[in-house]
Amino acid sequence: MKWLTDSWYRPRAIRIVLLPISVLYQFVIALRRLAYQASVLKQHKVDAPVIIVGNITVGGTGKTPTVIWLATKLKKAGYNPGIISRGYGGYADNYPQDVRHNSDPRIVGDEPVIISQQTNCPMAVSPKRVDAAKFLIKEHQCDVIISDDGLQHYALARDIEIVVVDGLRGFGNHYCLPAGPLREPISRLRHVDFTISNGENSNASYVMTLNPGPVINVADKEVQQTLADFRDQTVHTLAGIGHPERFFNYLRDSGLIIEPHYFIDHHRFKAVDLHFNDNNPIIMTEKDAIKCRAFATDNMWYIPVKASINNDLEKSILTQLAGTNHHG
Image 1 (tube, rainbow, N blue to C red):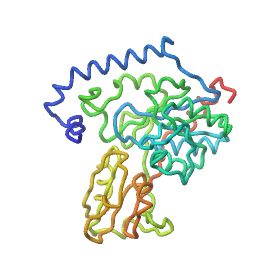
Image 2: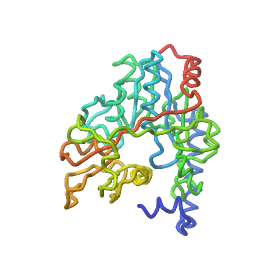
Image 3: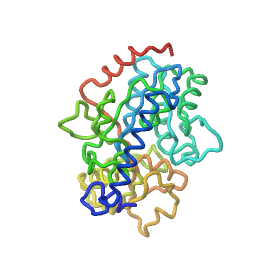
Image 4: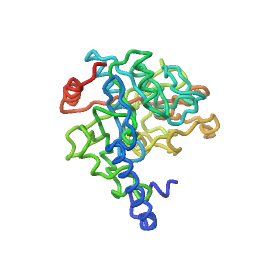
């Protein structure tokens, strides 16, 4: 499907063919949102304020680091946040699933395991986010719910909406699916509470910077190096994420000679995927490393990232949260 995603960001004739479907798609999602607003379709409220962290484009924009940042700030402010997710890429027999730092990503999804490890917050996944939220409130006494993704999951009533946009790629050709990358029209941003740009964007009130950590060995996280240790070496780089070029370009800019290997978002890695017939180091994202631990060798490495966001966004969110009419 790379030909399709490429057409969203570069001129391709295929978009003309797909445009009528995009118009129909946009009509359907507008009608659906209207149905929730008019209470034709039911929105479910839970006994705690709900903060949605989502996006309006397909592919990685940086929601996961934003969720981790937000959960950390809420804990620091005295809240007991719970985090919910669809658990995309995981296949459980029943839901909601409690997520712990050692959960199997094949069952709960890759991003939830990372979030659980980095926040130490109660977390649950379910295709029905309302069920996951109720579970965390009942079982873990959470007093605020953060939804990782779910901007378009209108069945769950929300108090605050935060949208993360890609500062580098923006909104592509500005068309809705399938002719473009938009899940909803750009006008949807007028109705959200906070918009964060992942990377420099002169129009954004809030800009997120992703700060890479040390290079950590996948087989033994106690073994760490710096990127400078890999400079001028040929390394295999792999990414099964929404926007791999951001990661690959970072490594190139750091002086590494890379052989990039592309995988689809949420790819379920097997040992054979990482057999490259040489002993060159393999560097991946943390999201991919989670799924490679079971067969990791000592030449596999990953780089975690940590978000920082400017302009006192934390204070603005806490102020708005304090004004919600929930008893928690």
